[in-house]
Amino acid sequence: MSRYDSLVDSLGDTPLVGLPRLSPSPRVRLWAKLEDRNPTGSVKDRAATYMVRDAEKEGLLRPGATILEPTSGNTGISLAMVAALRGYRLICVMPENTSTERRQLLTMYGARIILSPAAGGSNQAVARAKELAAEHPDWVMLYQYGNPANALAHYETTGPELLRDLPGITHFVAGLGTTGTLMGTGRYLREQVPGIQIVAAEPRYGELVYGLRNIDEGFVPELYDPSVLSTRFSVGPRDALRRTRELVEREGIFAGISTGAALHAALGMAGKAVEADERADIAFVVADAGWKYLSTGAYSGTLAEAEAALEGQLWA
Amino acid sequence: MAIEVRIPTILRSYTAGAKAVAADGETLAGLVDNLDSRHPGIKARLVTESGALHRFVNVYVNDEDVRFTGALDTALKDGDSVTILPAVAGG
Image 1: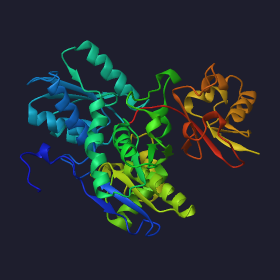
Image 2 (image 1 turned 180 degrees about the horizontal axis):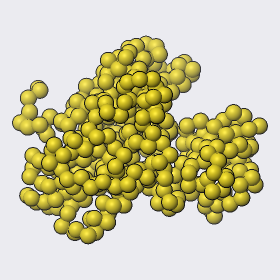
Image 3 (image 1 turned 90 degrees about the vertical axis):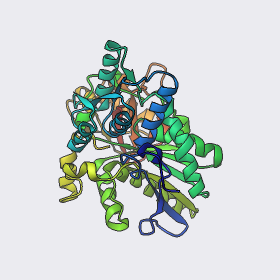
Image 4 (image 1 turned 30 degrees about the vertical axis):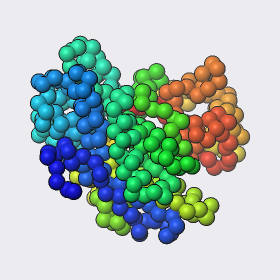
């Protein structure tokens, strides 16, 4: 059934598509979970919808309420859509080094944007949002980094969808941001599939993003539980861009840059399976499509040019 | 034996501004000691008094997070690349 009462109701149940050209062999296969096929075009629609529903259930959100959220983009866009449909105001605290398309989309949906400094990545956005929340006790901060409804969305939807579509799944690979996708999906799959490997691909940005004043300004999301993961890779912009381009050139999938990082880690796991002569069905998350990153230059010119253009940007 | 260690901006006061330095070690713990002998004071920024990696410091050997490969006991070999980064938020 592909008919829904409203856009929000069409959440999830996204396609899982094989990658016959990028998979190393018929026994070691890669599968892409197309999360860009969600209401606003990213995996964050799942978390945003769950967090809003949960806050409504708890009585925190009443008609006309103001939602506050630190976000580098996708969660904000998802929340902006849900807020517009349900009659809430949305204020996003967003690092200034994010793509212009994200700001355009947020503005289009009627959200207000408060920019935080580029240095320190989303840490500064989180810190600023926490200050604002303290100053405005009537605003509701859903706080994707620590809200259990974020991970629960993936435990209840993404995980079961993957197992239904790929009962022989051996690896799950996703980008690491709030950690919600990996924690929720990972927990579900670990309960259902003995021996499954849960692999995180963490984007490695340019130096500006790590420009904290001291180590104690570092940040680990409250949702993060390392025991859910099998391992975690740091993927730099060159590898992420190269894989993003391979994905569109060889399989026709036009994905955002963080997906290239996830594909890079997935191919690494595939290589290990081939080496060990083991069967593998490796699912990875296409977190969003490439539209929001066209202005970054990620898809044009040489890899070196694209990498230079991304320097200092929060590309995932 | 030489292992390249990439130093984040925040710790370059210990390496005279160098973005990458060379160090030796059979394990990550050995490498950190060696690093500290060449750049005194850096160890205390990476490892807590109880001997664990600082909560907001991430260390990667050939791009893999050492917390999943034995932490400070992670074995190293010639030509490995070690990257040190502060923990920052994504999302």
